[in-house]
Length: 230
Image 1: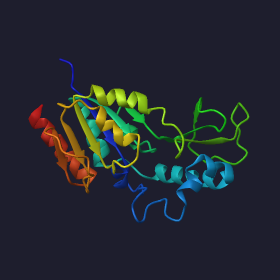
Image 2: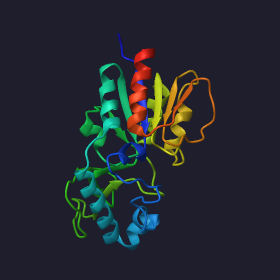
Image 3: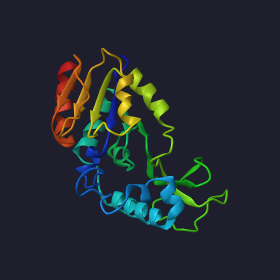
Image 4: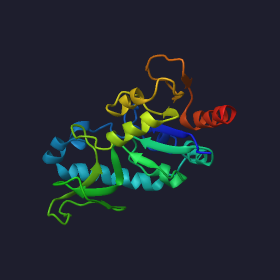
């Protein structure tokens, strides 16, 4: 029998418990930086060295942390479901936890590309320096989707959401678009679970279930609920 398709949208709240500071927390990693200085094409054009230093720090941090119980719990669900992770996070903690189908909406910290073209991308584990060139002669930059840039992976992500038998949202404010709009693609009769320590305002429906807990605790409860309903 085919496994049900379980599609999970994850945000910063999933990685926060591994020690990755979140965008919107008062002590978040963006504090002290104007977001547009380090995460926009304009910021890149104005001061690429600052942008590279910022993401070099993020890359070093991502190498130091490990997957938490939320990442591991989602990976474990592959035993019973066809699990697809759509993540807004740029770290690789889902992959390291064992999830086999991960779609990164906003890019990946361990990839880089030319500032002249979005493709191809290249693996990077160390630092990117000013003057490091891609084969096309462009300066190498993080393969991250910045504010004001298109989100090319939203198309396959929306198709996954529309095909979901179960849809889960974990650790995201549901304020950043187009990612927040993915829930609108989910079928009206499809069960939807929202896990967050502060449940975002997304309206009500008969098939909407909320778990107001941090990601690690919430995923454990989700596993229990799904084991009962399977």
